[in-house]
Image (cartoon, rainbow, N blue to C red; front, side):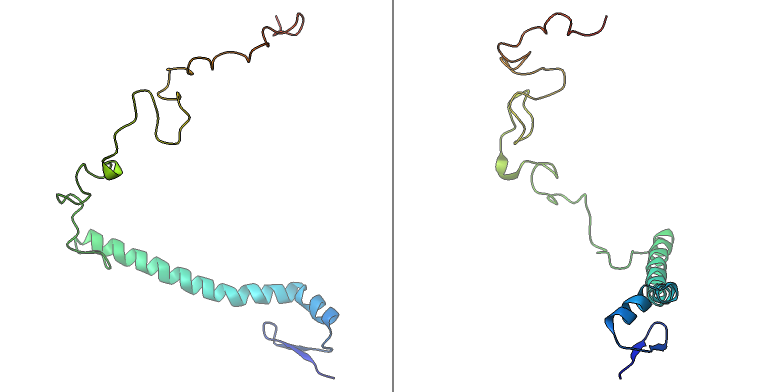
Length: 138
């Protein structure tokens, strides 16, 4: 009868049945061994990331170039973002009429304090004040 070998725990299980493997894999020792095994890779990867960040900061503090950055990049160069700067409208679009927000915003809901457009203020037609006794507490 074949036996099952667990790489994480370095043990042979007595039987190669689904129920035995399931019971072993849900055990505390097996779960701890798996955490330890995969934790070694996470800690190495995290340490490499920390070392890269520290190297970049040390280079910046020394006044040197940041590794991987383009030394000729100048964000203030003329024409960097085209005419109108970085916030220009694409294709020379005209700005929206005064009081209206960006495209896609419901009409009439512009700058704060303006209020709703005509016909959109108050309760719907036929729904006036609440019946007596149903108003706000006094």
